[in-house]
Image (cartoon, rainbow over all chains, first blue to last red; front, side, top):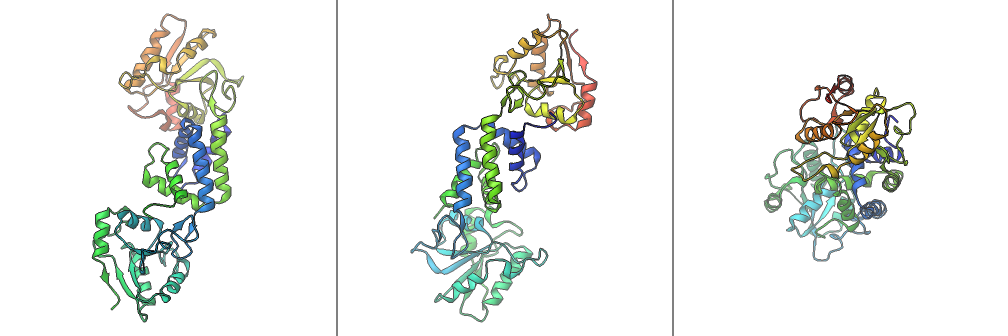
Length: 201
Length: 201
């Protein structure tokens, strides 16, 4: 033989499409599927298809949703003038899990990175500018990580709204340097939100 | 919202069925599927279904196959009197990848472990005894890891074939203590196979 059976190779090849999953891990995953029930396998297949078909960015804030507009943007009790600007879906969901934030989000889907050749036009920024224009007393809370890319993006957003009537704040410096927002515990996140500093002057 | 969209939760739940995959890793995998092409998703769904439907233990040796009898057992050029006894599929495939072994396999699908309450009847041993009875000059190469369970199983197999005309050998002690067979490099595996020691006297 020299290799695994074809059906097994196909499983291994598929699982190697996941980021950070090499051949060994993919083999472990493939072996694990053999021990799963047919129901688990069918659920996984359904979830893959439905996820791919239904999940998309919210047309307003760019957050992950299976509707046209996400559940936060369509919630009348949320303060539409308070927009928390985050790098990715996971950051937004981290705030939601923390549970005390009553504003809405704007998901950039990336950060400006001159090193990786990612410019302001490559992230979800133009829709933020349009959003803010329709608001009466908007505040943008910049909840980006304290890396070079996070700082660059924070400064860029501060600059484009400088001449406008927009309050811009950032999370308080309780965030440990270099940590991903999504890994912070709820108390730290709440504290950083509460202690946010106005940086537009 | 408080939680991810339902289609996303379903993906996360599914991926948590993999051993060692917690919520965070499952979320990363679920997000990764959103960036995969529809073709990749369909291939993964196909592979899951076909793997579950087609993969089974070989009716002779217990190794993983998508046929009734695996490609090693059905290969006329392999020496059917030389049986390498391994713990699991991955060990067998590790020898196949090393490429110099010309005998066949017997996959135990486990090791005897009094601590975990796994007895001789819980692993694929009775079929090994039936197999050996049909052979003229059989040699069993016990290629089990050097853990308590591996040693217990080695001693047990040695005992049940003691009164029979069976040569029993084991891999040479080039195997580092406590290492999984599947992680050994090809040269070490070849060497351990070549240096195998007869332990039936």
